[in-house]
Length: 423
Ligand SMILES: Cc1ncc(COP(=O)(O)O)c(C=O)c1O
Image (cartoon, rainbow, N blue to C red; front, side, top):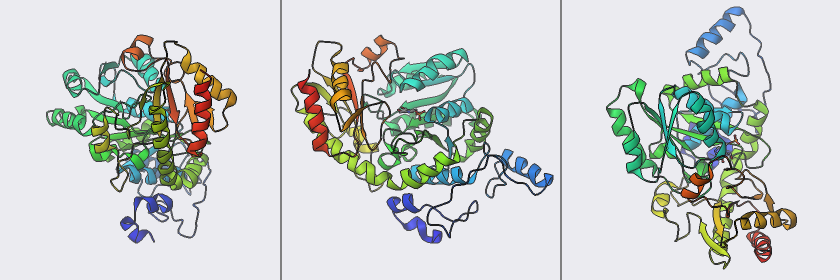
């Protein structure tokens, strides 16, 4: 079966993956079994010592399993599926999106070196860079990453990482991955390999179904699998999809920091999340279109950001890089909108009404869930970012983030309309 699998579509390959490789043989299973061992039986101390030696030297083509925190078959199976979905060399899974992001960054940067990123980022990534990285004397330079010239201007010999989210959480602003990548490639051509700059893209909002940054020139993709890839809201998990050259380095950091993913969570993402990803996000996007159009025509809405709307500012870039594996434009299932009002608390009034009265919309952080989730990023997920920085970068007090789920869009409109009537 696996012999010819490469000629099948991404959709089918996300369902089947590879049931037999040099690392596992599940060719007699329909669903891969869940391996759950904190430690593995070794036949001899020599085999144990060979296992450690091979692990340290990245010879895990046919791994000798030693201990769950180092590597184990169920998580490796999920990693293989993720690497293929993103079009990268290899993937590593982690206990959360934040474990993936922090471990990846710390594997690539040291005190005195520089990360260039945007003014706004997902709140915990922002806080990691603002607090912990400042303590480690890692310079975090924030620029408007929608403006390529600003990135170029701020690259110094200390720069090692360019980190971005596109579309940006929560305002969906676009950053041009191919153009940023070409700046990085030009700069790297002048440097030796040990000093190269890595372009890292957080692809959580899009999933590999809707955008594959490595194809557009990114070096590394990070994910919160807690979101649309997991899909059902049952597991917290993260991943980094990386080139072969840094796999081993990152694997060792994961072993030492200890943020590996539990095989039980890996199994459920592999069994439920990954195979249903295309089905879910296609339907979510279809509904998002209807909701975005409804919001855009609503008299109480100041503006709506959804990359599929004609009014969307970065649509040219969006069309270039946000595509499903068949090449169709994939504007996604995330919507950001602002309520028209001079009152600063109108956004929270709106979501509070939803929390108390809605059946189809849930007030909760997270996104990409089968259930539609709503929140106020200014005071919730992005609360750590200084107020002036948010206001200067299009993140408004009355801005609302909506992650469209699988409910009937008519029901979602019904619940939104009731909330609009309440303000
Ligand atoms: C874009 C983005 N990246 C990373 C994360 C962190 O993921 P996790 O909550 O799985 O640690 C989140 C969480 O909301 C997110 O929205």
